[in-house]
Length: 335
Image 1 (cartoon, rainbow, N blue to C red):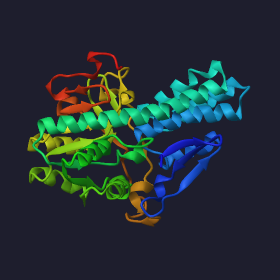
Image 2: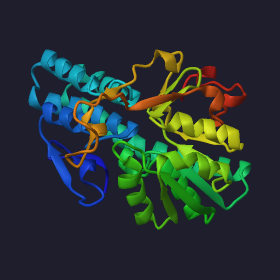
Image 3: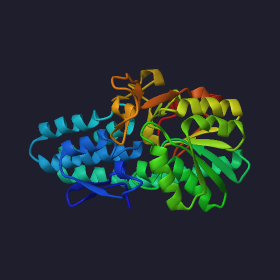
């Protein structure tokens, strides 16, 4: 099952807010409903957002085939639904570039984004597994954070794609998954995917991840990314930066698995990225019940910036970049 797809002139997606208890699909027939699904994280994950962006333009064209101004306005609204993940804007812009060629061309481009996402993630997964086996004594034990599996993509996954590739080679020992507060994408989504893959795994609270590395229980950290800037800074789910600090102190490689579409050469460094700040309810309540005193202030960053100097390797479908030793994504243009 794909996490996001196009069926009968609608966007169809797994509602990730209902996992792990309920595997349910949502059918989205309006641009407004798509934006709502993105904002409430029913659709999430950088590559999946790229697909959503492209499909959002196709949906807008289907609804207003003779009104390009309306389509461009809808596309701008989709593009701005989440500002930090570069794939969303990338997907919108890619489909929108075909607008003058007609609705069929826009849809064909959007569907091409989906197919390419699957191929790219399979390729980067194999490359990442090979890099780890060349640089870490196997079988490999991995610490990961948030969810960068099939749910975060059209299918297959990035960080969990690497896990899948190692597992299929018989070279994976265990995965430690951080719960990823405040919305528990690690506990709700990553653990669900690992169980379905038959991968041995253990869930740890976020604050214990550094101790897992310090005790030598994991040989590598493997995460995804929502944006990689031109100098190699990595923007990913908040909590990635402290994990990278712990990995550096423990002498454990910090590996980022992401497609070339997540690399943003137009943004020089992580300091230039608009980091999304989400609402207080995600922190002060859980399941609708308050867990903090009424009126408590929050600072709910959705992402943090991991400096390039802490990133051992960025693995894409076409290359391995080594930021910690001077490699930069802008050393050459993406394929």
